[in-house]
Image (cartoon, rainbow, N blue to C red; front, side, top):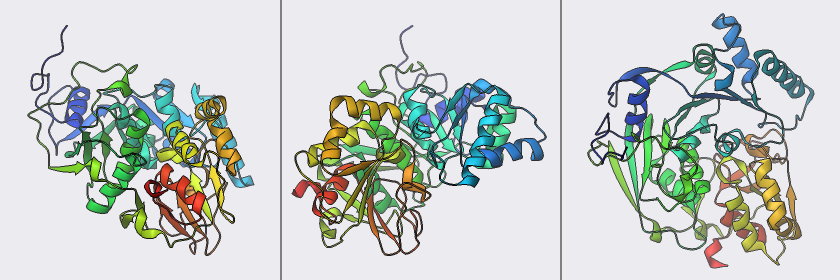
Length: 422
């Protein structure tokens, strides 16, 4: 059957979120409506799973999950365990996974939960996917409605296979043109944080239009970082080379008559490398203005920028060079698969030759619990998503956020550096 043109879908005209939630609800719903819908997947990770088990059993009185095949459990936040209490908690998680017959279980070293969910096609266009991590928005890279929820809401979804939502309004970000060399999706994300603020899209869906050419790696960055705008979800329309291999339902497409709460146009060709200055993600300045900021550590990794595209970008800048004296460069691939690819093609070797240290695939020091915790007074340029006080260790440390390109250039010079100026 030929796909219907825009405006003629079963629930048209509608935003992407309205289409997904209408389809799940079995009726047309609009922004502001409350819906109870089935979920496709529920993901939980090592740090919160013990609390979720308690909520499931003690608060809800549910001894078992509704459908083990809906559940994905990933040990990634402190992987491998860095203390006895953490190890004990992970033992409990493994026991629960075995008791429940959960087959989608990823051990320490498999990678960041959001990355492995997308890599292994555990999310698909049109799905509704919940995560116990706030950056579950990342699943919008393949046009799934991914969103993070708290312990009790995740427990309820595990027990019932359903969740309740208020259908969000939608903010449309319309990109014009393409990025210049050494400018990346992370720069667009940080630019939006600076322009809109931490509450600029509170409980809204953010749709990214005009980016059909964007890679899947970059789409994940954009959708993941929509969390820092307060967004309920971030979605890229399911078109372009990036989503080949993912089954796109005929009913899921851009509708010309959809109603958006606001539209923000961005000239991508005018964008320059951006850096978030501590202690907030929305205090953003051009990297070129921060050349006097010396760093002690540079971290390339996490759910926002630990993918092969990022490692290649960093290696391209560091090829045949060595990081500055007194700087630590920590590289943590977002998954084991990415690590293997980076080894096979020589990207990892280039980074090691430049002086990098490589960590176990996972979240690493992003949450400040292991593998690169900062001490008092230290400064880090990180490709992560948050930089509030104490995020990566000491509350007296300072965390700046930038792209993998900016991170590599900074490691090379020892000061925050605009990679376009090398």
